[in-house]
Length: 304
Image 1: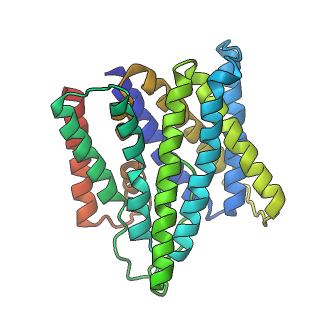
Image 2: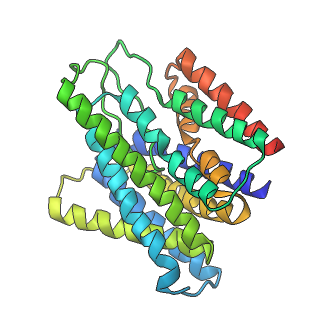
């Protein structure tokens, strides 16, 4: 039960971080949000790990999550490009299938969830994918955030955009699948390092992704725009995102990876609900149905 609670906590933090990340891009450039949240998250992870007295566990324990941090950058990059050339209602659901990889890895490693939990997993995963499908927009206004990997994403307005060409749609699907694979591998990497030290899983992953993002930033030298009102939002993104990583790493030590991975990737539900409550964004009927399916799935998992 503790693993379930921790995984749901990770999902809440990832979903909230996505929402705040998208919201903050209204006051700052995307790169300002990414770099700022990465720095805050890295400092927070380092302070928590050192304050807890967790010494360096050794490279043999941290290397999986270090590679996972690189994979997370690949997930974000692929997802951004897919959004730029494709359609959100296609890209987001495909990317949300990242949970398949840790689920299969967990089952292959010998995990055997109860039958009722497997039903719950199917319902929760299907519900999250339904929630991630963007409703058709008639006013050309974009949403607040695109839910992926627990990292901030500003979603561009797509309602009034021209329909992508067949070639662009195919490339967007391929990039979405690549993003899903990268994110799935990231979750598996967190599990691998958390077996030795969950806090170093959190810190190692953040250090790796922050380093890669910094190198890309130095190479591209993009424009950085930042307002004073955006600073608290960006800091909150870093805190929520890193907290989610830590909670997920802890969850993998308390329950099956095949179960906690599904619960940890329900963050699209949180993002959409926050957009509805805070910004009064419309929720489509299929998204409501997806949210209900997710709640039923979580209940079945907890009952197993």
